[in-house]
Image (cartoon, rainbow, N blue to C red; front, side, top):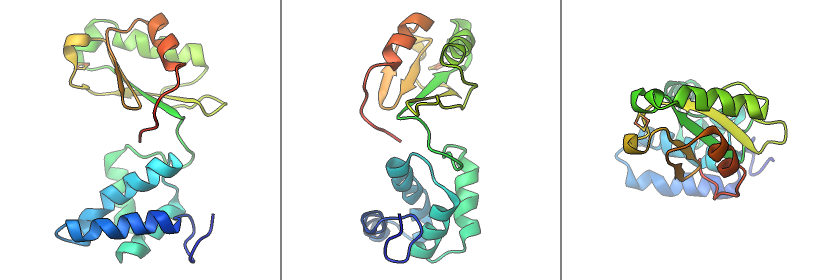
Length: 166
Ligand code: FES
């Protein structure tokens, strides 16, 4: 997707990033929201997108890449699944089977943690506390918090269609 000389970013993405700039004290603060814009559209932020964002905001690509690497949220090599499921493994969830939930779901879907199914539908990732300890163990699947999960219930829930989220 080449548009307006950019490698990856569409004119719409560039316009959305530019529109954010006046709302922040300096353009450096726009880097993170820009990464989220690209991730929302592409489900990952490839290196070429980093170069594009840097060009739009007027920074060296290394600065944008530093921000991306720091957050460890953005996939870079290939898109995450249409459903991105964060399985909590912090203490409250771990005590109620969070680790087993993660292992069982990964095994059932034939992937390792952080992996994506071959059909591109599902990525499963371990996560730190989701702020819903009363409902342990829980999973954040795109925008949906799945509470009191068993492996069976989680497997069924993750097959349901969901709104896209980054
Ligand atoms: S420990 Fe899992 S939501 Fe808090």
